[in-house]
Image (cartoon, rainbow, N blue to C red):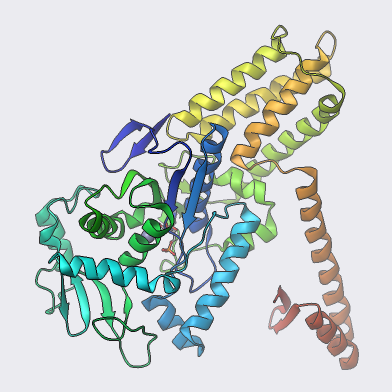
Length: 472
Ligand code: AMP
Ligand code: ZN
């Protein structure tokens, strides 16, 4: 199995440190808002790497952090008039809900504010080694003490300097130096430290949380391509100067999800929230769409693509529904004689070959849908196709589809149907409330609003009509 390693800029054979515990770390969101589907692409790629390694027989531990203290959180909380911790709590919970619904939940989701002592310990070690210095209660990393600085982003020292000079900070010895601890400012959240009250910088969070939950050397580190420099570069500089060991062995960077050729991002204001997308389409459709390109290729998010994913998944589930009855009735024999059985074997080896080639999900889906067409032909021809071949096809297809998370079991689907039913009922109640309001029947209107509130459904009246959301 080969993985493209950003560190070497080459495809490398994947050899884990310990096959009993392959460790994966994924840079998670800053929780000042709901996550968008660009964030979701990176989380999904991580999830698929994890599932595929499981399919290959490895035991995997995945950690994905939540950055719950940061300038963006403080600024947004200020705008909304809530405390930064309240804001981070609310969006942290929302993120975990989204991850659960999207099937990308990690084994652990560490929060930055719950790892302050670990961060302080790393910073202290770097100070003791002379790799950091204190200026007025802030602590900076001394980049010129790490000769390999720039090895991940492949930047030359002069490029690094030019980039860093954009933001001149007189307190730094070298423009490339970065802060690991920020001295407290009035009104901002802060924690005690040997250098006075303050809060951690962003990069030190990931070093501390990754090493605490996964050990000093990780197998795979995943992030969106925007984080390669400076965030991931700084994670390496901090961690490796503390441990004198490689921090991560394979660095995976996910290309951007785009809208009309532009990166989807909060600051670009062109984002679509994952929860909105999941309200419109089933989880499997969004997952299918986001893996329809291999992860190192940018992917444009558009309706035509989503509709194609929707119809592809309809084809897949129709095929699996038709095959299902053979699974329960037929003992699978380990012989491959019929053309359909050959097609099943071919699908399995093409799927593995595609996924082994740096997780080429586009090709893996191609192999799956080739078999779907073959099954459909066999189902209509039926004559002469051994029933065991249908059972084999069913088992092979459900297995690989679950690796990609594009097929849900009956129980999961029933859950989705319940949600759809609920949404229809709420829409009906809002319609009745609207009729009452046009008759000036305020009692009925208020009663509907209040009773829905008791059921955790909050109605908001806007100029374009009433909208609703689930509150907890
Ligand atoms: P953030 O909250 O911006 O730190 O992002 C959380 C994760 O999503 C990081 O790994 C980012 O690199 C990743 N990410 C952000 N925007 C995109 C995008 N448009 N496409 C793919 N990944 C993204
Ligand atoms: Zn990170």
